[in-house]
Structures are given as structure tokens and as C-alpha cells.
Length: 194
Image (tube, rainbow, N blue to C red; front, top):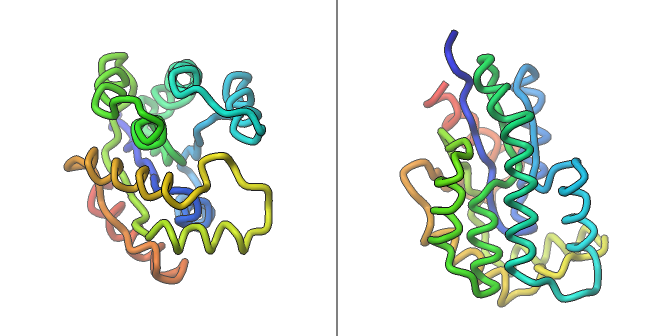
């Protein structure tokens, strides 16, 4: 049996990831769609912390994300890929490297730690490329409570780190285009590996 492909969608807050993933669901109904933080116990703890007023500790957040990812890979990612299903993930360890990196941790060490733990390595990373200013405009239009990470200088730092850690698996999509145009770009790239 052929292994499934592992596709990760990344980008700064407000880049259009969620919109793209919703559109991909109609094109890949048999794929397994996952997200980080997960809906598991650890993932829900992370979500609560992100939405709270408390200032987050980067090391604590990284540890929680790694525990959440460990469980997710074991219970969902590897079983799906090994059974021949494609997995499309909303955020992965690149997000940790970029976000906790922007909080002062070493982004290269974060990537190395995740790889050394044996987590699944993506076949393709779709990065929605958009300016921090444009992303914040979109976040404000959503008119929902914002997370601690949604500040201009912080998002600029996150974007900068994403670009530093991009490897040969990364494909940059133009996040300024319409949702349907972004989808077309994504479908072309996914078609290249399926």
C-alpha cells in the first residue's frame, strides 16, 4: 500500500489559512484534516492560554505544543499516512519555530527538536505569504477577540522567521489574491506531489 502524503498549511495569523483549508475539504473529501493545537486535552489547554490575558512563557508554550504534537502524530498523523490517506494539517512545528522564535527561543533548535523526536516530516508546506499589515486588517475585520500574538511588530518577526526556516518543502502562495485564486495555487502545488 502506498503511503499517504502529509501537507501542512502555514502562515501568520490573518493570512487566510482557515479559508484555504475549508476550500480544500471540498476537493479532498477523503483526506484527514487536522490542526494544531489539536482538540485534545493538551490542545485545548493551549487554546485557553492563547486566548487569556496572561503573558505566555515561550518555553512553557513550546513544551505544551510538543506534547500535543506527540499525541497527535501517534494517534492520527502516522496511522492515517500509513493507511494510505493524505493528511492536511493546519499549522505544525514550523509555527512553533516562528511564533516561539519571535518570543526569543532559537527557531533552528525548535525545528531540530521536532525532527529528532521523530515527528512526521511534511511532503509539502503551503505558506500563505502576506504582509503583517494586511493580515492585521483582516483580523480586525473579523471583529472577534484577538490572541496575544496579533500585534504588527510581532507578526513581522514571525513572518521573518518563517522565511528563514523555509526549506525545499515550502511553497509560497500569494495570500493577497482572492480565496479562489489562492485555492488554485494550492491545488496546483498539491497536484505536483499526489
